[in-house]
Image 1 (cartoon, helix red, strand yellow):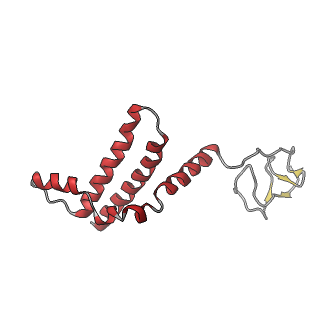
Image 2 (tube, rainbow, N blue to C red):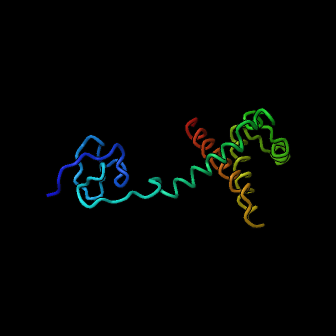
Image 3 (tube, rainbow, N blue to C red):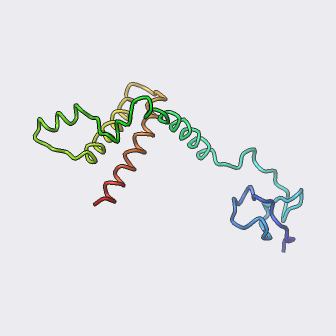
Length: 146
């Protein structure tokens, strides 16, 4: 049986399968050069690469839209989609603002996605994240309002 040892405050390998104050019998745990088994050097980063890259992109996506409301006004809240509304009326449709907003968001999502046919452009990916996030929240709100 392995020797009982307390894990460091954050166990780099098991990522919190147990509390730092609880004993750990796993061979991966390292505490001041003592371990339940062979000492293992932790990797340079304990955060998975996917999480690291995704969070970097989320930060960039957020910086892309923060402050634009001051610059452009709150066009999404006010539903300023004049051409879409004009076309809808011409077709005999009276679309409520909350539905028009969701349709406009879906159109922006499609547009950003299809721009990739012209090749990779970072801006299309980052803006696409924002439009997809907005559409997801808008649709959730529409469903909750039913």
